[in-house]
Image (tube, rainbow, N blue to C red; front, side, top):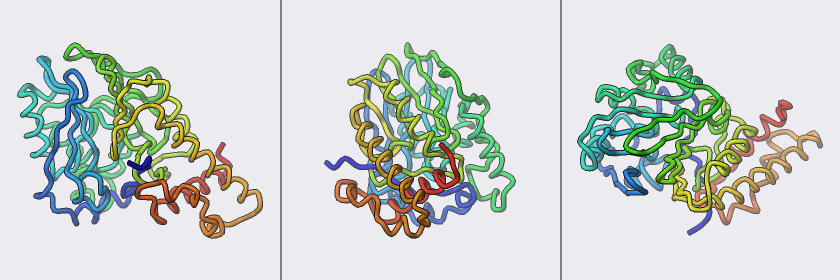
Length: 316
């Protein structure tokens, strides 16, 4: 299998409100597949080949911790799949859904929030994520955007600092804030005893990295987030990206090296006075294209454009 990095739809807040790409998917055909990753820890994945934005699986991955104390969820998928997600959870555990934490704001990870809040879940997320949802609720088309539904807004928020710790089902769950990486409100979630780490979308192994600058993401934050992820894991940790395949810590090194190498080339071209079209025409990811599954021109250009924008603006 290729070592690869996934670029999903990559929609900004404005485009999240319409989301025509999700409407192209036949949600009735999607099945939710359950895989056990460790003691009481499960991963739920939508079946592949149906989501135009994610060929590997429909929507974002969901994490579940289940036991006598009830259920803790990571992310909530597309709203159209909420019933199927709940049915999959009920096959694992029939107890109350007590907590839900969002890795970031994109709708394939948050659109089911309101549904699970009605099931009793207390929603946790970064302050910036909630602020983004509030902005969406005031934008045109908010009434048809499930991410903008106030019933799905996080009730408990946190900023940068030590991890938020939840003690449940004989497990310690760490909500680890990541500084402005994929978006401005990213969180990693670590199950300490099971040694499983869910990392959302700032690492992805199909396509090139997606730095969603319109939602607060940044190159600097992505690099810092990768460093934090490596420090949060050991050689045996099962790392779960929001899309793509499960990885171990060593897989992060070439991913980070690729980002640094491309960024250095972009920085050199900016110093030479090159414009964005000139930088894109230089095909700076060419050395990686053959090795990156899903490394299309559009994913490459989105990645390079975001790097150019941040470096051009003088961000360090």
